[in-house]
Length: 115
Length: 245
Image (cartoon, rainbow over all chains, first blue to last red; front, side):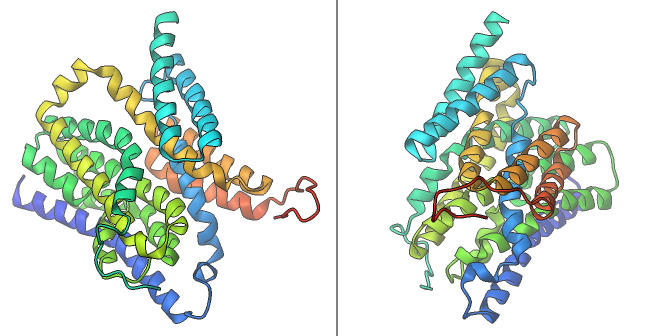
């Protein structure tokens, strides 16, 4: 990389870091000013709603399979179903993911053979 | 709130590492792809590692190397890289109420990616305050190191890997939607929340299918939030004492 390109990369990196850091400092100061209130009450209502919506959006973005053919979509649907069932039974974080990934893999392989 | 100055070994970093393991299924294949694309775009292995270590934001890294390779003006490359990452501004304030006082947080914010936010937003409120710095440290460090290691692997052996085990690169990323599903399902506490979250998921999916992945996350989240505020649904009749929202 040229010198200019290194500078551009460092500016992009620093900017990304500040995008993550500065809102934290703003919120911490807001929390400090309203020390008597419960921490969650200090959060603006729109932020309380937006947090889960961002997670839902990240889920939506990640749903598209790497190979978006019939096998990929079928494996996604079945994999999500199994993830949900394992979560209802275990209420844990890891096992549903393991179950979902294994199911996704098996369905992709089987579907590619059958279809 | 207790002052946890150091992420002590007993303060939960192991829990953080363990709970971030599912993220690797999504991080490593994408990082391998980035390493491969970066070297194909003319960046050396060291430069690829520097980008992954310092910028550490998946989509914007692909954009950065792609625009540089196509000869775009550097100011525009940097501006669009930052524009993609602007969605991160709402992450830290959302988890701030659960961050105990510590001088480590400013440094740890480098690790606040989409996935770490989703994990932290769900898990931090459930953890004792004394374990939260350690938990975040463990989870964020594992994710960061896996991203760097995956980029290295992609830069050095990406082509060979994708030819040798093409199915692995297709199956492992499913760990991400599976994890996000587990994180978001407990939020379906009422019809109002369910509809808003459902709209957010579908909108993001449609944005991705139409090639608008990067703008998709903030746009879909805004659609969901708007729906939450605009639509009032009659709740199902619940037994006496049941909560109504």
